[in-house]
Image (cartoon, rainbow, N blue to C red):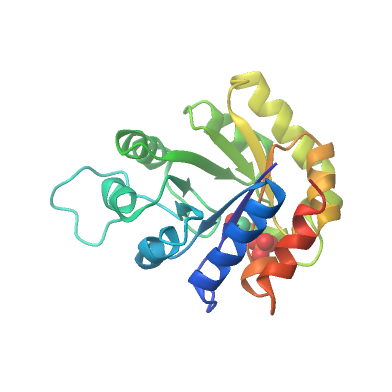
Length: 214
Ligand SMILES: O=C(CO)COP(=O)(O)O
């Protein structure tokens, strides 16, 4: 299982979370990545943890003030990027353009989606992975795998029908080893989570609990 920790814009210490993630990943042989704010990518990557961007823009080098250029986040140390997160939605053409930008820069990609129908559309664009995250469950205490197992199974089936090479992750409310195990049982190959780690008093303990479900 792949564990992708999205730090959003939470007021946590990104380097402390990154060091915790690298330590737990190494100790347990689990792939854990951290997606900090763009301005923190270089400091997070310097810890040695797998580092992702939260977004890249569908643009090339040029006159694009204020856009997150895929090459720039890759230069800073990111090796992958989220796209179309529920809190950073894109138009379909911009998801496609951002996937092109990420591919140009050598970044792995996860396109987020609300439901199996959007998962199918996202998978058709050829990302490395899609992630189903029901917005109503994001930031809550009940994991998507418990609250709505059918949406995870539906996402796995939808992606498989379009392109079996696209991995399927799930997220929203994931915080424990039981949540991770439940997601795996439903066919997910990874989880996205945020508050369970970014808001934890002890991110190392939170991550240790999570990977106990691998
Ligand atoms: O949006 C998410 C990850 O990208 C999920 O957030 P929570 O883990 O806080 O529910």
